[in-house]
Image (cartoon, rainbow, N blue to C red; front, side, top):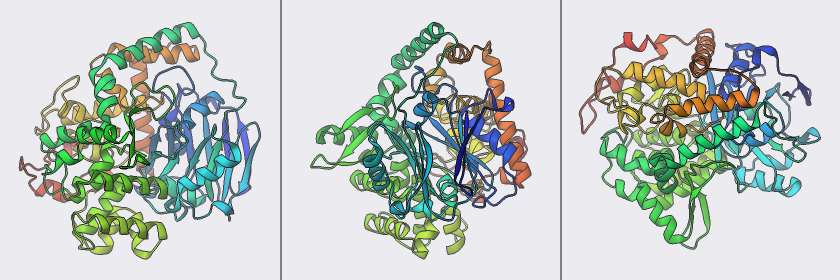
Length: 568
């Protein structure tokens, strides 16, 4: 079923899944609903926009690492279509409850939260106004218990700032898993919805068309994940921050806001050092972010007294607040990550916004106290805080900075496109704006997993990005973690196992090539919305300085011809 939460009329109604929407899940379903039901020229924070939450096709099943939740809307950051997905428990619970999507529409004149259990209701939430995600979750857990999953926004979402995230509680009940990119928390805040409580009590669970076939395919897939050196050993031990020294060694780590590709104190912020600190202090490595995760790339980071600070932090967050800002103190970065989770702001966008502020002379590179002060400005909603919370492009406009690393208004992640040209193609051409997860060419460009494409060459980058964007769009329909593709690149037979799980779940006869066609269809849907929203090929470009400013140590520029980018 699909649930419709109408914030204008304060009603929650269910409907059967329309025929057109069957066969879609996760990102595919959020994008299809947006394409069909949201006027492409509407204001992203206006009454006509809708926020869509959809678990993947395999949510609630025995498939490993399959519970990611897709959240989509017209983005206030990119002004186009947006999907961002998160781990945590909400996707799994929605799958077990038989809820294929939640459509949030309309606009309330006060703040509410939704309770979705055996009873479904909207509850006035004045007690939650102005609270961060941690206090919001604590309040709702006292009322409904710790067995529920909670989706929430912090102060940044309430203020409808363009870098706001949507938080999802993890297995420990903490709001640490975020749909971070594109300002979707601002859309949720614009609706007057503070949180959604998902109570799995009474869930009937998933019905399989062929449970035996499903278990056999899931067992093969899980075994392949456990046996692969990346998903079975490296990520559980070093987490996503295992990338730090690798990307730095490749000369592709943006340092001091995209000035150079190597950070002189990289060892201090590396995954190896992070793991040492966690072990020394009694934290936890190999921590799953959701039930059924076999990769377990997350971790629990504690202070010197062994008290919890944050999850991870993960590679993108450590880069955005570390090398990007000239900071090498992991404890300080962990506290910044906690603040970002609590206030509900994207760490990539905020790190970039602060980088631009440093370029403008607001604070200096390496100024930890200054960064903490800027986070405080955001939480209090001061004029400067609202500017920062609106993203890097807004900060650049306000302070007259022309050198700003954004595509379609969204800030770049932790790989410089002059040193990893395939990811530059993804940044430029993805319908999602600058988003490494839309087509992760780093896997082939730097890691050499599955195939190897020279990261500095022009040849092969467009084809590589296009192929990965298609496969990623298909995978995002399932709810599987993107890290699974590290294994799948070297074990192409496991794509067949994935399709077998979908077939056994729903009683289908889908072929693997048809599954990839689903990815092509999702991209067509997203590009169609963006065209009707007013985006053109001129928006599928990187900022000028990437074409003109040589990037040490390779001293290269981004030089993929525009006509090649237009072939995506």
